[in-house]
Length: 122
Image (cartoon, rainbow, N blue to C red):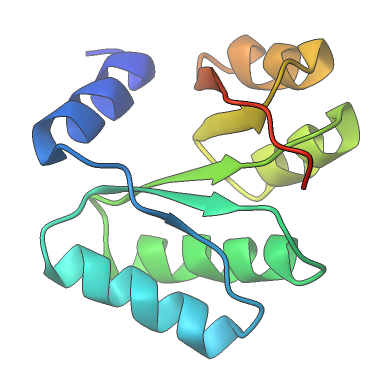
C-alpha cells in the first residue's frame, strides 16, 4: 500500500481527522498521547503559532518512540519554506489553506499526501 493510501485509509477508518494547535509543548504532547490511547492513528497539527515547528518536531520524536502507528500531518502551510521545514521534521501529510504550488511539490516529490482545504485567512 502506498503512503497516500495508508493516510487516506486511516482517516476514513477513524471517521475523523483531529486537528489542533497549542503553544505549550507539554499540552501538545498530552493531547497527542490521549488521541493515540483513544484509537486515533492520524492527526493534523496546525502551523498557527511560533512554537508550531518545534512542537511538531517533538511530536514526531514521541511518535517514533511510543506511537509507531501514528500518522502525523501538518496543516496551515502557506509557503514553500514552511513546507520544506515540516517535511524535514518528518511530517507525512500536508493540509494547506488554499493552494501553494511549491509546498505541493515538496510533499508530492516524496510521495506524501497533499490536500488543499478551505482557505482561511489565519
